[in-house]
Amino acid sequence: MLRVLVLVPYYGGSHRAWAEGYVRASRHEVSLVTLPARFWKWRMQGGAVTLATEVVARGLHPDVIVATDMVNLPAFLGLTRRHLGQVPVLLYCHENQLTYPLQPGEKRDLTYAMINWLSMLAADRVCFNSRFHLEDWFGALPGLLKHFPDCSHLPKIPEVFARSEVLPVGCTLRELLDTASSVSEANEPPLILWNQRWEYDKDPEAFFRALDTLVARGIAFRVALAGSNVRQQPEEFEAARERLGARVVHFGYADFATYRRLLWEADVVVSTARHEFFGVAVVEAITCATFPILPRRLSYPELIPPSFHDQCLYTAPEELVSHLVWALTHRTEAHEVALGLRPAMLRFDWTEVAPRYDELLEEVAATAPV
Image (cartoon, rainbow, N blue to C red; front, side, top):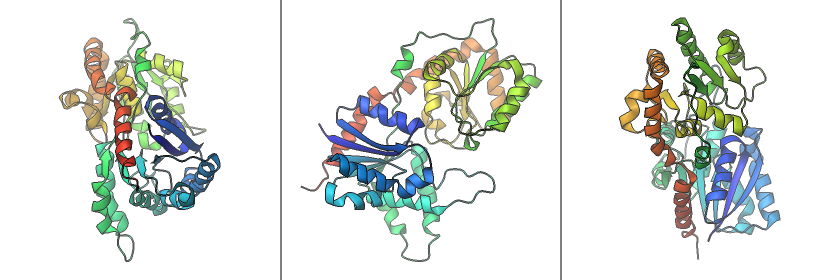
């Protein structure tokens, strides 16, 4: 059994769920050192100092470290070198600060992308949560490094690529299946679920335009607007709530019991994301037999088996609407498709994924100097 140290400087949302899920599912002894999920820029700039201080204070001596992408890994390793020595490290990339989409008028601060890159250089193994994410990062990386005047890091790219791979996010899906399934009553309009974050990169305005089109065409539906919201005034959501009126049956963050009920009651889950490196919310919804309508890009073509792509993926707004109309007017058929997709989602359950993490960490730990 290994002693595994997991560093999570932004301990909230999907990052927290991922870390806690691995602690429960691993066969190894896993310790967490975390910081609260706020001030993400400061976490990347200064979090390594606090993490290092706690590791030393707790007297932790792991066989292997897992650091998430918001750790300034060279700084952490430098601050702990006298305490930890040459312990091997796996860097896990939930996201990155080079290809994350910016809001209109926002300029990218390359400081944070460089922290990602330097952390990859310092790690013994680099894991991305999807093939799309891996390819997106390495596709954009030369452009980042060419910004700088000399001593180019470009020759280092193949070295880092050679020790990079895809390791999907583990999801806690089995407990969703422990709930008796229920679908919308036949005498109620079908339920559309939004369970993404209420933020720019998920493009909620495109989702609401599609719903407005359904209203204009006289298509009956209800909608649940769940998902996390960190904004005080999500204007597009408030405006949509006013327009849609009684069609809105849930509005705002849902606790676990409510969220699980919505997953089972929903007929359709929709994404209009501009950015998605994995898609935990979609995996959860499909596990509960909710029919997915997703962009034919980003990580979604990896989640959905190719034989289902034409039914579930779209490339343009009008195709999104046509998929919605079909699913809402063919509820039984859409439900059968969702049931057929469930086995593909269960491959992401921690019972399937944790052994892969454990074996990979054993392999990384074996690289430690004797």
